[in-house]
Image (spheres, rainbow over the protein chains, first blue to last red):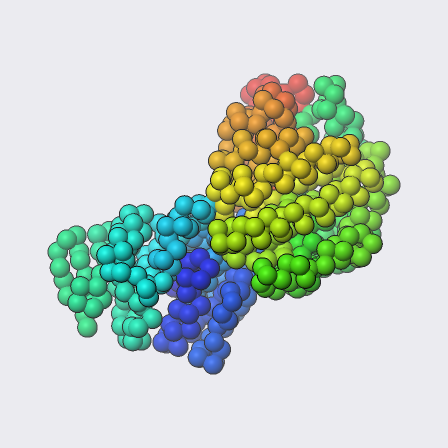
Length: 225
Length: 356
């Protein structure tokens, strides 16, 4: 079973991402939301057979991980989804959520878990958040497999590149998309997420000629269009 | 008194506080959220009345002989009284579904009179629970009440992510909320102290996972010092607990001068002993999930042993505890194992001979 975690601090665009991403998916999908943001999931955009569960179990405490594991087990047993998508609280440590998900495969006996972590970062607030917040903020970035950025609208190119470099200093191996992901068409977004699936150390994506250029350990390759 | 002990918990606590005789270390697994299971009740049945909450605590004590009964003002009662909407699950801890405060410009519209005892049925219920336990069991076992800290109380009014953002964008508004919550918490503390309860001062949202040390110093520390001073002014006793990783703020927590300090299992007891041990008793920290809920009795036994080995020689004393509240489907045999290990490895005088 595949589990995708859509993480990021308040205002980074998690729910906007889900509203764009969920309608693109085939197969059976279940969504677990932990806490609700200002923007609800747009039920009109989501396929009718997508199961959406709210998990109201606090935001950080040890019991959350346990409750999440129970919820994943219950969904797997009762709904048999192809994938579960988790939108955790914006102040949750992504490493804790990853650990909980992986334990559902090991300790909890759900078999092999394929895990993807997509982290949205409001680039315009990065410096302030990095300085001001507790460990959760950088923990999210450090455990991303795909980094998507928001807050780029009024940013000069040089400033944007510098900030992206600073984010990537915390996670140089994650795939990232250096432009406004909201402008990607559905197929391109899916391909970007596919790219993350095969990402290994040294792989990342950047916007040289659109996003479809991969740099693999310094060697340019063309990604499938 | 439990059949396997030689002293009552109250006699043991008095020995601990006065340097007198003790049969074993104090052992206080946080049998709180899951206490219904001690009496065959769901969480919803347990939380329905003061009588049922007290009954579950007393049944737990009869089974295990743990050294503390726990009443539960809780983490969300301030927000709920003001109008935050809570879930009502059958067998889980209620959580906030909708916060009462949407906009920091509306702070003045919050009616904190609703939080006061005369206007809050939940406050009255939890206070009645403490009274029942103290009336029925007070000569034998102490009672503590789990009460939110001020920063966590603010998070029950205004969502934590917005709260965190506002510490940068609108710090004055957060200070205003902290002031209001601090003032109302004073009355809450005083009421529970007046009936004879200890204060279990819990501040999970101030964890180092969420706020850094600078924010703790600015938004949490001054109000907490004020509350601790007020507790002591009213002759109360308080244990200060923050969940999660508190390594960077333990020394700041010490400055608030609680009577004892409790840490989550993410913090090593050896570090706690080094940073807080010279000033006050330390409390902790068997893993509540991986060991207490998911572990075997043998794993519980070994986790208790490690805690005692790391902590028994702390200069101002040590109380064996879980790293956080016990939640979920905890096997009761693990609680028996916890207390059996406390009696075995924590037998006084504690020394390596106990585990040789």
